[in-house]
Image (cartoon, helix red, strand yellow):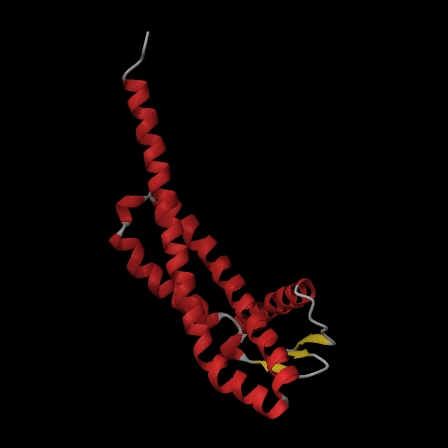
Length: 169
């Protein structure tokens, strides 16, 4: 319960900011102990425990617990810890972006297709499957970026080492 209450506060603030940036005419974002309500002139949604970002963190921790041991020699332990913290924030942000995308698609679907068809398409198709596809793509992007940064860092270190070993005088 406590984790949800803290996560929904962050999610509410980020949702409000991202909706304002994307130009959505939000009437109100209300954070409550068990849910978050986002109201728009065309539709309103209630974000419950399943959409609060906890699933995205579990998904990330599961993948991280597989990726890190298999690639442990890639980085020092402190960089793995730092990448774990950065990954948590990345996936919380990714979840907020997922909610905004879903909400924006919902507003457009209701606007162009009407409330019955638009809401049915959004909640029965996109809502169910989009999260895990979004998180899967996020995992690929995150770990590929992590691998690239680690390789770039090791190449720079190797190049500096080789230059230091062969001084030109």
